[in-house]
Length: 418
Image (cartoon, rainbow, N blue to C red; front, side):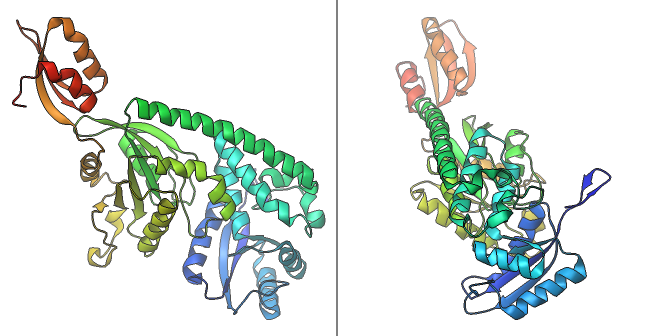
């Protein structure tokens, strides 16, 4: 990484894929390109080799290794990123053959997470994922472990000497695990308070860069960082959202997903993702303009099912609909809501869909409260259920949109047909 006029120039990166037929290598490589840009690199080109299985020593064949070396020399490449996990031996051999630093897909994603984490929980989860990935890879890394510097794959705990001591790493992982338990305890306590207060929660989930943060900002003015890059935000955000009928719910943004998300990260961020599992309603946000829209929706659905969200109402949200060139060829999902969070289009339909899926339907009632029971009106006001009130000679006449709890308070004083 070079410095010019106090500015850090992005590393010029070559992206390499090995196509063994396990998955769509071309689509995965496109995603790796976006990941590289999100990580601060400048992807220059891609190279792909088809093989029935990875080469033990260098992942790709010897001819491909020579092609990579030549390309790096001719194009001033500073970083090689492989679109799969590499063994320490493969990394060492590739760096020796090409004289260029090599990272794999998991190292890149971990590095992006290390850059994005802001909260205590996020930082703990990222560090634990990095250490767990690093621990079985200590043998064979040699002197590379102690090197300092900048660039993708070198941030976070990889900059310290603790990697050279397995016992030290294991102790650190245990310490982080204890810290995470405390964070999770606090999060569960918050969830219990919400349940006790009858707060309905709505979770935003979906593929990274689908526009969840932009939608969050539009609906709640949350001030969440929203950029056209993968994993622009990592830490969950919760904000109050008022629905058209007057009901206030809690909207929670969760970490974005990608295909082949490293196992270590899935485990580390399970507590964050489980906020979706405990939500009353889930909004599965997808970039409708992406040719991979259907795959993105399926990835999210699979993860939600693995978290036990099968009984929750899930509303597919096709965001960025303004960028869809041919609606007839775009992804179509039953019950989906088409919106553009950037242009504030379709939001009314989305809010109505949320209201239609509320776990307990509110009903509108009128009641005549004795003056001695004016405190009931104050409670309705605090709950956001009071629609109107009028002082009369007989008492306080109120009209409210209430759920069972408030309905029980008003039952003795109702004046409507019910």
